[in-house]
Image (cartoon, rainbow, N blue to C red; front, top):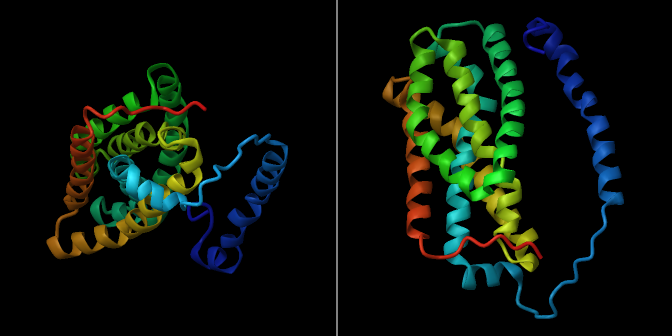
Length: 246
């Protein structure tokens, strides 16, 4: 929209268009929920799921939160902060930055599908382990490329990193939890990772760039959070990462 419209049109009516276009998705979601069959029967125990998660599955919850946080830091950088970052780092216009961001978002959609096919064959945890290693190794080169004239290459590389990270997470997190804890556990993991850690990412990255005077500094945040996820995987080694099919 920013690429197609001038600032006045965007502020006047253009901002409403994405919301209107999302209405069919809302109707599809309602239809999907009404047609899904659910044979789940809650346990008779009175212990709240969150307490059971905290008491009996602390290590697993910490691992899931660490991996999900690595994903949402990348997500908020690519989907939210990238256009603003590009304007300052690559010295390009808002329209060009928005166009690059839009293309990257569509590339992520394609990449997620490809990475999901691998996850279906090799397993969600296999892809997630590989993804956090890739994120730790390639986040810096991706930003370096954009800072040194290879804007499209670096931006698409950032999108590819996100796609590999994001593809298996929505299935792997619930399936890694006992069935009676899936809803509460997944909500807590995704809520903290996306709402708190990811939601603060643009603010933290913007502050870091201003404080350090370096546009490469966001890469170190992404590397750090990826290393934390790797450390969590290492600490969890020896415990079974079971996928609860039932």
